[in-house]
Image (cartoon, rainbow, N blue to C red; front, side):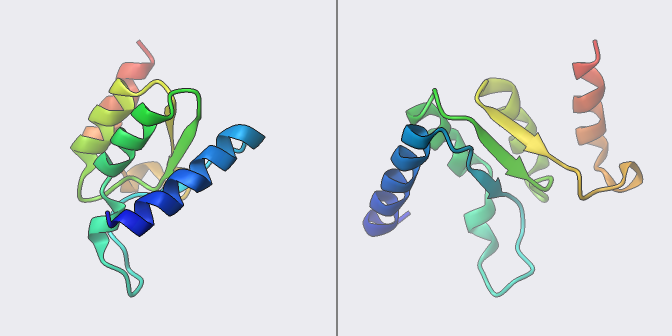
Length: 104
């Protein structure tokens, strides 16, 4: 992430924290005219560590980085996921195993 982008992101997240706004972030590959690298879930890992009192919601399933996404969700108590756009039959097997473990 470039220095200007990082500074902008920090000021945006500080504002979210001050106003108790929950940022939603798209993770995974991009079908728009953007590079997919920006949707890698591990970029959120560092930010979530820097802002432990701020809740983050990641949308989509982070494909093709599903295992990294699951790992980060286990390790960051302030990061949640939203997979509401997917039918159960369209979910990756590792994601299904992850959600099954949550039920105990």
